[in-house]
Amino acid sequence: MQYWLLLSLLLFGTASTAAPKNEDQDFTANLIRKSNETLQAKCQAATQQLAAAKGSYQTGVRTQEKWLMCECLAPEFERLIKAENPATITADTVTKSLQTGLQNCSAKSMRITIPLACKEDAAKAKPPADPDTYCNCMTTGVNRLSDADLIESSARAYREFQAKVEAKSKGLPEPVFEPGEFEKLDQACKKKS
Image 1 (cartoon, rainbow, N blue to C red):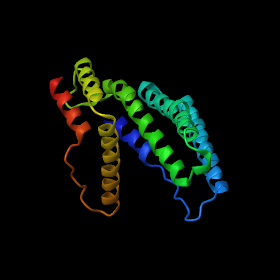
Image 2: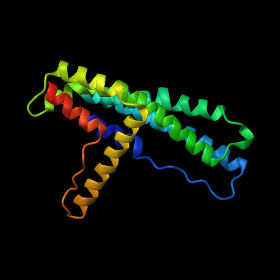
Image 3: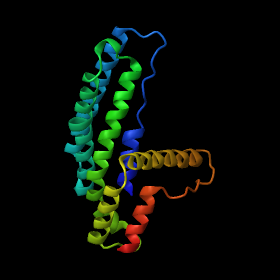
Image 4: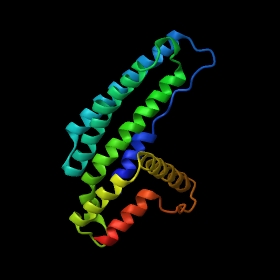
């Protein structure tokens, strides 16, 4: 599923900030400020990409990216940071808050977006799948998966994609992976339709 990979790249293709050994409050306050600035920049980029989107699929993907960055992750990060004792916030706390916010928002985003992207996936299936049957099956299956399974499937898709890119860049055969939870669901729904 193309959207699954796009979301994986968006979510897991970002770098995390390592905490220095001797932290102080100025460093932590600066890290929170920088994290907020990064989220705002990603929100602005997502807004611009949405404005430039062409076609229903690209518009759907960009709409979800904008929702993720602007309407979910930034407020979720702010909520998590405010729940902490300001005197005890460390770089590790900030990083964990970003990761927790990202996981919470990612699961919500996948539950919304996967059903939206399914009609295009059904049309691209070989042979083409019945969109209504496929989408009903995918929506039901996605809703049955735990947030942890959704996040792990997305992270796994990203790791496998990176391994394939690395193999190709080195002229090696593309690695073959066993299907994950999401891929199994996708295959089962295509068979039903």
